[in-house]
Length: 394
Image (cartoon, rainbow, N blue to C red; front, side, top):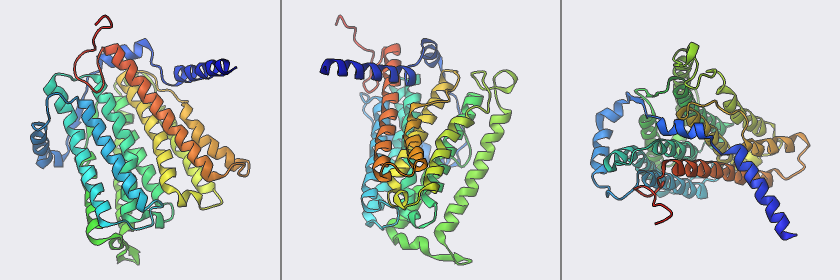
């Protein structure tokens, strides 16, 4: 009986992976043929950051794999958000100064490691499309950690819909950057882009470390505190950046008749983005309790996992010149929360949020793991170790 149950569970798991994570032979071939293309106009990179990165790369041992550098950066950011969330779980409580300082240092270290992984790949002769795929995958997961640290620093949990608004802006901007890449085949950085945004976050964290959360409650004008103006300025800058992305998306398609590099409609990637944002906005606004405000960290992490997987699918579609899938099994998480509200809260919302978050991260982890293993097998390389794989006979 136990063997039958185990066999059935294995069969279900295999069908899940097959329908959700496995790439086709054609997709793998196109991934292998992919060439990284980017245009970097960041003024801060040219002003000083490139010099810093060129110095740091000389300190890296030649045996360290580029993807290992990327992973270390992801782990550092995860640790910083876990530390800050232990003090400010609902983004309303103040944390010790050192907690904000470690978050600022963690983001700076992540930024540095994220910038030198490609340099390490070229330095060790280990450049491959897997590096780009792994780098963007880690970036998609990191964005929710950085966003949460901003919310903790400015206590945005005290602002109605504050954490949700900033989280949605973060996911939309990151997704749109790769949406435009899917249309043009080229990742484009503007004068104020990732580096400048990260430095701005570091400044916010350092300011909070020095002066405390109360500094963001300082009344500036019209009776509104400073943090309202910071969020409003960020929102306007994000709207402008999104407009720039939309202009590129609708006018820069390199496929037939202005389509994407896969020859598909430039509008289609909008639907996975809506599948990420709309359910969580509805869940948050339709609840009759304060459970999501009280557990905004958990809610944001769940949202971030779904957004990360949608972005990863878009990255793979771009790199493999393939059609983007609409359905993803990770959507079961937010749909369960929606159905629970629709049927008058059959399950406790807090407990169901935990289940949904664990499920979403499991789905994201399985997807990333399976894709990376397929690609490593196809390229005959290791993901965290330099050099080709040894043959089985050896």
